[in-house]
Image (cartoon, rainbow over all chains, first blue to last red; front, side, top):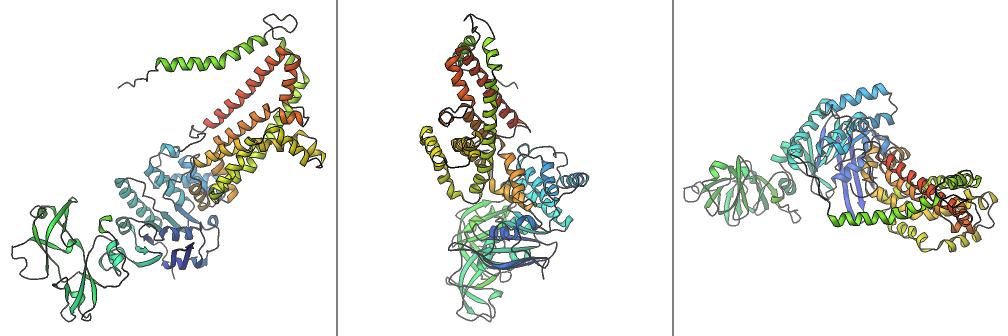
Length: 364
Length: 267
């Protein structure tokens, strides 16, 4: 049994099924990220947990108690919002103090706690400033301190970094994780940024169309996606439609090219599958260098090169994407004929169904 | 590096001077007129001011209108702040309807309104029907509605009502606490602007008070105007001073706490 449980939660907005029966069990002190594209239901789920909205079905349980119908001000949950939510008429200090005042804590207690939390978020010097005198990153730090001041049972974060610039995002997400670990607070984090989710979470739940596609540890989500959607949403993925030719040897037919992949072993002949290959697993070489000798290759022409720092991403005809070291990529300019070696190991295989949602890899 | 102050163009200065003259000439003329002696018509005397300030009716009507204004402001704020807050928060689709209703007092002439109201409420208790603090206050609340609504509406639009409310609630605040401690301070300037306009209405409204036969400040002003022209000029300037004092207090209160408040508009 988890500390925070979402049991068969349903929420409809008119004909739209925003949540279609999600189940989550989160242990005490754990950090779960709800990850997914816009409209997948992640914020709806968070708002249900916060109490700002009521589910059409299902229960929310915290520490064994059903809080589904408890009003938000009695749930003991700290929340950090996507929009800047500091009270403009109050200083940073007064913002952090607000929840404690509501709880009737005496002045000395309040002051001590406020100072401690502002120090924790690195803003001990800025307590007297008003929100309009703080940068976006500082405002979100104060919002975090404010949410933590009430010692909430669960900390909820609704895309708190989305309005910040890239550098501050990375810095702040690491701080959020540090503070979460330090305080051991159960945390539910909503984001559409898969890198963010993978970097700071104990568990990631990928949502799509109001359901949880897969939930697991970040590494598991990356290396062993269970659905095509997860495979594409977490990181970038090459998707090759293929047919099993020989289940014993793991041979598949992709558009007339025979490939051998370990994951195909044991599959039935004729089964339609999706071969999923991470870009970093594809090995590109210039054509005509004997690279085709050992088979398991696909041929193509380099269409684009995108410099990503230490690695360069190459797009090859046939929809292939390969990441390779920038130094090696220099030898394969745009227009070069290449062969891509598909490794037999490390490649995922999923049964091809009719309703596989497509995600544009360029978006991630 | 020194910052250069932007230069004002000649045409801007001319227009500014013309505008200043437009407002200042009547005021100065009124001021000079008010300094004439009631007995000799000669300049300069404070007799007109003495006449006004030592007139019992001046203080009486000022008190009646002052209390009336306060009552109208309190009733309007108590009625409209929670209503507009709720509309912004939960019923945004009702906003156009309320905005339309707020325009009605502009469309219906005061004389029509007062005749209708007096007829409708004729049978009501005397504490309501015969007192300025009853029926007149209620009528002025209707008159102040558009000013109050559009001021408050602009104030609510300038803040993120949803997020502030949810942030407050997540920290344990109830609805009333959220409204009083979080929302109200952030629309304070808008509420003050609406209140000031309500005050201006009460201090200047003549038709309704006259037809309803209540002795308010504007009625006294009109009476003095007919009987004592120099006193009327002095009274006009005193009334002007009261208006300016109210406006300055609005600016003063609005700018307190670091001047982070604004009357309206996006942040």
